[in-house]
Amino acid sequence: MKSILNKAVLTASGFLFACELSAQNEAASGSNIFIYTLVGIAIVLFFGMLINVADNLIGIEAKQNNIDVDENGLAFLPGLNHLFGGKAPSYTGGTPVTILNRGHDILLEGEASGAIEDATQVTRVAVQPPNFLGLQPIPKLTVAVGDTVKAGDQVFFDKKMPEVAFVAPVSGEVIEVNRGAKRAISEIVILADKEQKYRQFDTPDASADRGALVDFLKESGAWALLRQRPYNVIPDPAVTPRDIFVSTFDTAPLAPNNDLVVAGQEAAFQQGIDVLARLTDGQVHLGLNGNGDAAPAAAFTDAQNASKRFFKGQHPAGNVGVQLHHTAPVGGTDVVWTLGVQEVIALGNLFLNGRIDSTRVVGIVGAEVSEPKYVRTYAGANVGELLSGNLSDNKVRLISGDVLSGLAKAENGYLNFFDDQLTVIAEGDYYEMFGWLIPSSLRPTISNTFPNFLLPEVKFEADTNTHGEKRAFVVTNDYEQVMPMDVYTQQLMKSIIINDIERMEGLGILELVEEDVALCEFVCVSKQPLQHILRQGLDLMREQG
Image 1: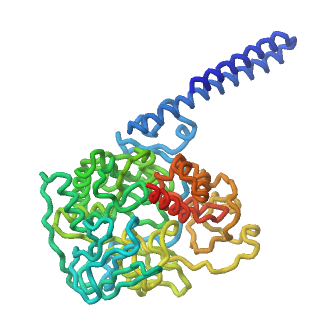
Image 2 (image 1 turned 90 degrees about the vertical axis):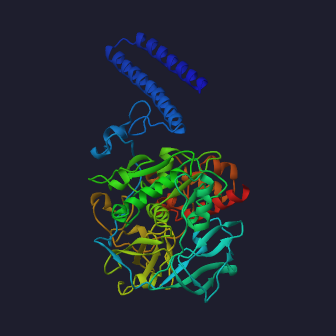
Image 3 (image 1 turned 30 degrees about the vertical axis):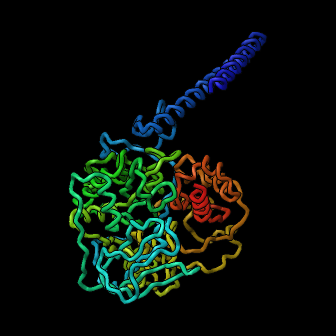
């Protein structure tokens, strides 16, 4: 770095000396003024470059040491984006604020609203081993068809981690054990009792050490609530996380409002945070929503035993991976855990009530839903029963999760364990003549080919049509417009495709999971399956250790 700066100084000095000689040889005063103007511009640009380099280096050093340098994460002087960009809302007070200038909000019709209803029509619930990444495809079952279980009873365990129990979310009778490709177990289906029965656990008291807490979480099934970065897998019980991150808001299309979810569950949320704080040597970090006109729920802003930071910006500002990247990035051998709001509530209820809590507030959303709404149901609830009598007559796609990173489900399928929304949109199985050459109607896009930028508040009835097929992986600036992380997405994807492990790691693959590149996949003009490519790279990295 010193040699580069020395060369820059010598170059600038030579340029100034040459300009001075040239100025002395000019007879016309107008020429002198022009040359002095160029000299002044060169001086400003040169020192601007030095200040920018210093700012970046100080910012990197501060981030590596988890130091908040100012509310925008700047180290020395603010840039134009921060001088003329978004401002932090007044309710943030003295809490650190990160303002993200890259991203994109996809506005869709069919947002849920109103009070939370009980989904009493749901009778079948499934535990799905593929929802828990990092497990072997064929776990060891501890139940069989016809067995009766209580909520909290073990139904299977992974042969690599036999001490970690995966438990029934409801009480009832095991009626199906379904298998997928290569005989891998895909679903363990339970016919739920009308009156739920729970297995009671003796919770550790406040004096219990971390080892006792870990043993209890493994036995009770609560260990499955945790996810580890890198890889987004079930954590290794033998590894203590550097930090734990919880995002309290979601910016994905039609995502549920977590302020509504936490209402009435404030004590459970705080209890969950207290437990997490005892499981790490570092901090529990809460990402707070800085986009609203009013402050987030007091359960989030007033939470104790946690470090809080506001994030303001478009999607994916609510992704825990983005918040982690701008707070204390994963690097080297770092291991961190992540949870969602409803997982923290479930953990807190376990310690408050001594029983596993698998209830979830789920948003039934999308333009093809007759009545978008919030329902209270169980993790793994049957999709068809959740949507009973609430669908349009059109041909539709059922998605567990959001339209960017969710998975398609059949009507006899089941909600994924970590998903808190069920999205229904039209099936886009039609051919579009001439494609993008003749724009026929407005659609969600970042392209200025459509006048969407003139109508920023318009909501769309999206469908599944990709408006094109997979094609050459061309270089564009689209990823950079929507990726609010210091990651070269296209270069990373190409390194994964050629299995260049060293380059993959150097380009930041360990910081990412599928949802972090989902928006890049949406804007990709090459129609590349970026989430699938990323998972292949993460699996390869895990295999190589």
